[in-house]
Image (tube, rainbow, N blue to C red; front, side, top):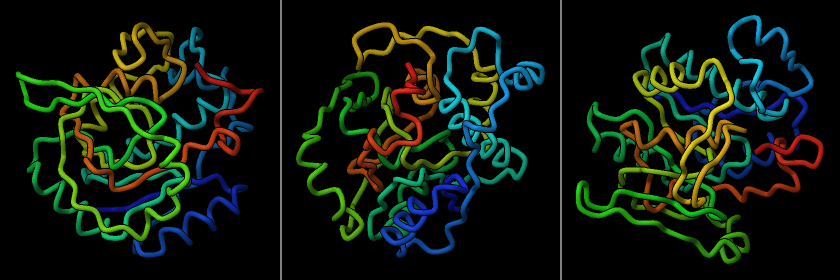
Length: 246
């Protein structure tokens, strides 16, 4: 399976940090991320990628397009891929553990999250048809120790996913990519019922869209995670005062 990380051309320092922390993951390829400075909403509307009522800021559009372009490649190639954002920290035994998790699912999967944001809850199907559960995290302890994650060996299982925020790393199949492409394009104004935030949420980012989409897919989450992100909004390429997304 191909490994790809998303990184803007100008984010040289983020690239260096990502490669230094994750040197143990071999043959990981860089995808040149879409930059918010290059977003032309009128052009995207004309091409049917956005609706006029889309409320994404330019940074959120750029982030979504980076993932969508990779999904398109997965569909065209007919081969699944592992996709990471450039703030991901990947566990020491990722290659073997990823294979184990994916193999355990056979052919019947759409997307597998390797990690999620720990400043938000995670909603899982614990026993199908019987028991669901919401997991909360000690995000303070995680933030203090996250840099050690790449030295840790993980024994993970795939658990059916209902809701999660965060896209630090995931595997996506051609079928899963097709489902998401068909659902999100054109990017438009939508309102979702998301249980882990206690109600209605606007489609203001790819993260919001996916959180609502997992329940309609064969989506899974690795427990424990195989990759993590500090989700540091102070240095995020999406979260800032000028371009905050919903």
